[in-house]
Image (cartoon, rainbow, N blue to C red; front, side, top):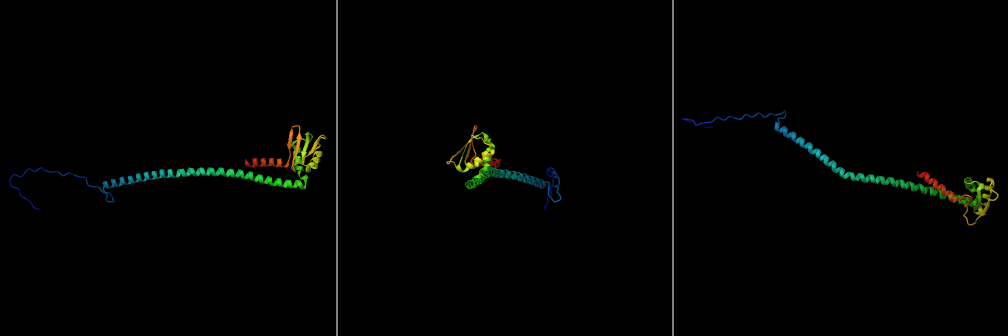
Length: 202
């Protein structure tokens, strides 16, 4: 470095004061305040970004999943209704099948042994008193059975028994002052069928 000696009047020189600056403080890791502030802001920005991403992802997922969940709920409700409908139809079909089988068995029994209808004839007498019956119309195969049941019940002597070959085996009609009672096998079975279906469908 060179220097120069000035003779005579030295030029006017103004003193210059150096600005004092606070020393840069450093933490244990050797980072400055500015670096720490930058790191804090970066961490905060990351947290905010993550929270916004989670919220956006949740909203998008809900928008995609919600319709699928609603469709699934509707499908399950439809399945429940279908199951109930199938159950009711199955009950009705099973009862009808059982009654049809019973009907065939009873009709076969009637041909072999008309006395097999004694229970049905007595059930009809239980509904109307034998003394109120004015006329009985029946298939010829049932005449002896009906006559026997009427005698046991103490029916009126004025009671008219009508044999009708046009009727099916197992058909019996009791005429009273209040109207006609159909005590036929098929009618009784239909009543049993309706009663079973009503009871099992509840």
